[in-house]
Image (cartoon, rainbow, N blue to C red):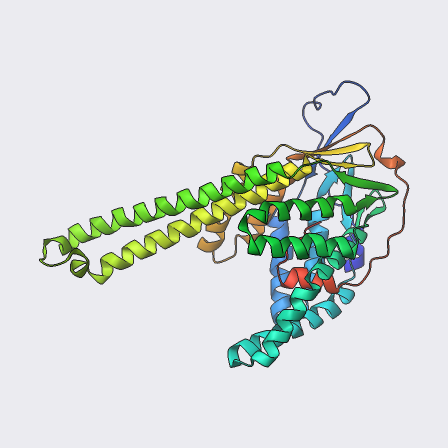
Length: 381
C-alpha cells in the first residue's frame, strides 16, 4: 500500500460503548475520544520503519515519521470520524537534509574544536528557533485533517519570537519566569489554531502554571534529599559489611572505593529517576490544564480527565520496559501512552461538527517540522 493510500485509509472503527455516555442537560453534546491502535499491529509498522531507516542510512526517516503519524492519527476517533495526517515525505526529506547537514557540521566542529564553525551555527539556531517553531506549527496544522477539513495555524512570527524567544531568555536569566514562559508558549499555540472558519482561544491564566512548576520543584528538591539519604543508608550498610568502620583513622579515609561508589551511584540514579518523575508530572499537569481551558469558535470546548500522576507512572514503567527489552517494547509503550492520554480526552459541542466550513491552509515548508523532529523541540500540535 502506498503512503498516499495509507494517509486516506479508514482504520477500524471503534466499538460502540456497552453503556451510553452520561447525558448532558441542554443542547450540549459530549464526544469522547477513542483510540483503536494495537501494540502488535504497530510493532510491524515500527520494525519496518527502523529497518528501512538503517538500510537507507537515515534517508527513509521522513517516510517513517509520516507513516507513524498516519497510524496514530488514523486510529484516533472523535464523533465517529478518525483524524488524518497528509504530509508529503519528500518535502520533509529536503528539510531533514538541510537540518541534518547543519547538525553534522556542528558535531564535527565540536569534536575537532573548530569553534569558528560551531559558534555561528549556535547563533543561527538561537536566532531562527522561534521561526522554526512557527513553521512547524503551520506545517503540522495544515497537514492534520478531521472530517475532510484541515486545521490551520494563524499565530504570527512576531508572537513566536515573544513566546519562544523573549520568554525563553527571561526564564534562562530568571528561573522564576519559567512557568510564565510555559504560559506564553501554550497560549500562543492554542490561540493560533483554526479549524475551518473557526478559531481557537485559550481561557487559562498564568497562576496554575506556577502551581505546577512549584510542585515539580518540590518533587525535585525532595527527591534529591531522598536520593542522598538512600545513597547514604546503602553506603552505610556496605561499610558495615565490608568492615570499613572497624578500621582506625578518619572516617572518610576508612571508606573503601566500593562504599563510595555505592553512595554516588545510588544517589545519582535515584535523583535522575525522581527528576524524570517531576518533569513528567509538569508535562502531564500542564497538558491537562491547557486542554481544559481551550475552546474552538465559542461552540466547542475540549476537556481532559486523565490523571497527571497516572501519566507519570505510565512514563516511568514505559521507560523501564524499553530499557529491559533493549528498545523492543517501544511500540507497546507508544500505544499504551497514546491510549491513556487520548481516551482521557473529550469535547463538548453546541453544534454539529459537520457544520464547520472549510478554509484552505497552505502546508508551507517542512524545514520547521524537520527541525522540531530532529532536534526534539516539543511543539506537538
